Image (tube, rainbow, N blue to C red; front, side, top):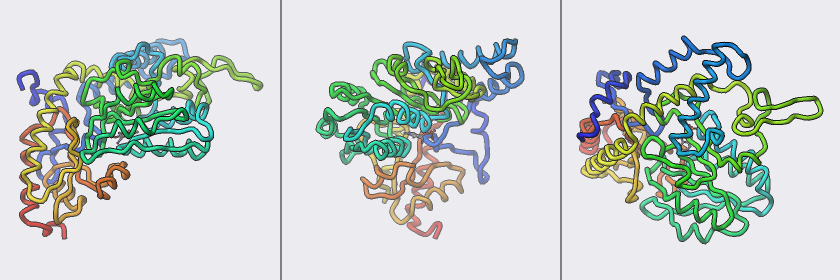
Length: 411
Ligand code: PMP
């Protein structure tokens, strides 16, 4: 890959030098969380060393620096997502809090008895439970877009689910359990034709492909910073300006008001209206640095490199006797999900950990889609741009060893 110097990239991530059980760490748990480049770690330290202050409230030098850094990060997120203005970006804790914010504001205001909410069979629990809570509270119905045997959503079945009662459709752009890349642009367009709004869960997409919310035409888009090389505890909701304008606040408190008396509170406009209290200022700044970092590498370069690495991974995994891949959609990103004859997924995970290889084994907070494939758990290696073919070779070699000693390890 001439356009992508993976060894140079790896030097930006100090934790990749870590040793685990006597081996150099092989991090293949990127769908759970990603590591942080030195540039992000340095930016956090710089914030606390030179800029730390609460924002908006006080007119002094450090408050101005902190406010500039925080609002600068908001601009970076807006540009990263292709939003038309910074006022469309709300900082939240992550994708989970983002979806809850949408369900508990727009949802509570607009979904009533007999209305319908649509999600896909692929969703993470974070994109199921808030809608289930809303449906239960309002007497609405939750409908599910089924998937085919490769783990791709069935658009024709989706079309049949849409009715005049459909208020909101919420789908993931990339499945965290199978890696399926979902045709969100089509899903959003069909939702709009039916008069519904559409939410896209970008938790697993923004680190692997270029995203443009205006191109997708999503009404809302959410993601978590920690899955895109930024700190934990920070993420963002994108919402179309006109929709945010009409939305009631979720939490009440300081920072989000224009005027308060004991009789009445006048709220700020978006995004401030949705950011009650002191936010995660430093980590938002860290998110801005992470976005600078991936944009320097180039999302197109990242996507191309990872695509080839995923093809290489799939090919390698399929050489292992008794290994069954779950989720074989034509378009996938980052994630492989598999089971291995003679072993429980947690036994495979443990055996890999003994070799310094970190993967997730379990239900990946997406039980409905695993059950669709008759599984309660899988082993899930997930890639980022700092992974290499050599690391995949090591993974595959250990799996071959396990396959040869069928069922003996860990029992
Ligand atoms: N949606 C998807 C598709 C995810 O993969 C995740 C994280 N595994 C989430 C939502 C929730 O993200 P967080 O836990 O960072 O809020």
